[in-house]
Length: 201
Image 1: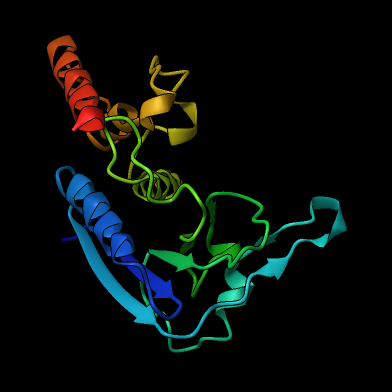
Image 2: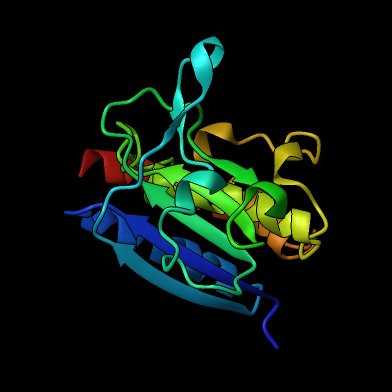
């Protein structure tokens, strides 16, 4: 039986192929530790983010914005990852997660813009793209809310991890493994050398 069912819905025409590479990177990581039922669909129309008022003065997609698209995404998923284009609008966050009360079709919502300036920059040696790290972070928030994982991704520093420039991937794997997996010092050194090599290629 699957631990959790996750649906990715990518909104917008002319979707950058790196979005799908980011999705596969996240799926590969999570599949190492959990039995996830994945679904991925594309919607050629752009989803319109809501304006969050003059006090915040920013835009973001929340559960109410998805209701216009009744058939996209499908029913009965635990988590919906909605990927959308900001199109130059000031976004409130790089990504956000909400529970069923403010989510999509009684499921958790992970809302992430995929056209921000840094989405496709590498994050140290641990992530191919910043977008991958953001998706992993928001998915872990939803999994924690569902009780699938014990530890909160918001507390990586409290758990003793000190790699924000590398996108906290070691912490992400530690959470997915139930607090068991940590990288050895020689593996970290090897990956650090790989990062230097990659920059100078």
